[in-house]
Image (tube, rainbow, N blue to C red; front, side, top):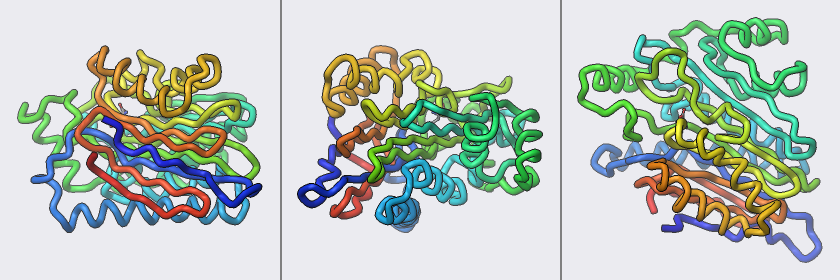
Length: 320
Ligand code: ASP
């Protein structure tokens, strides 16, 4: 069941390693619904986002900048369920959630239910760096955005016809709202280790198509969809958010590595293939540890993902 477990961060002898991995969502991705051209576009979008993050790390930049840059690039790409191209709520809105975490000092910032912020991951970082809070919600988060000089965008910015059609299919009962079909897939995330030994994680999503009552998933919940701790690892998750919150997936993986003495690969494997299925939780995670090892695993049909390490090639994959 292991999808990919690249041995990252080798570098030259004595060189300080760095590494970055990203995801673009996990779920049921029938090959019949993704044409060859569409697959090429997904792969290109992932490779470009990864390359942006990688060049920051190569030049000695911070992992925090690398994950934010990679996630913002995916938010700008309408193929993914984050920023432009986010899924619709039952009421026909786009409500966006994002989080970022700095493994140096466990500082974190997150926003949920924002409707006018072009790059929610950037606002999450502003919450972390320029407020006394960790998590801001809805119009309050947007007031904070204005106070920090963010330009708000109209709701129409996030609209894509494809996501709108998917909402209609959910409304008509054609698709089960909680199923991780292509109708929801596309949450994005990144994890990175920089040359200074600092880990960071970021995640951004529109959540689940047809969500109601200001539902919030795991992505902006620190410890559920996003976590980073320099003592062990950084994790970004994607999948059925309610289950990922209950299993505290991202923190669970970190705790297994830090306190349980497990390798990153073992911790990720157990959470994705034992803990989550036990709760009927579908999805996957990307993770990187303080040595630069990368794990990317999922228990669903596929997960859009890519990774690179110092001296290594870029690898992009969708299916097992
Ligand atoms: N985890 C996200 C949520 O539940 C959705 C996803 O990753 O596909 O909001």
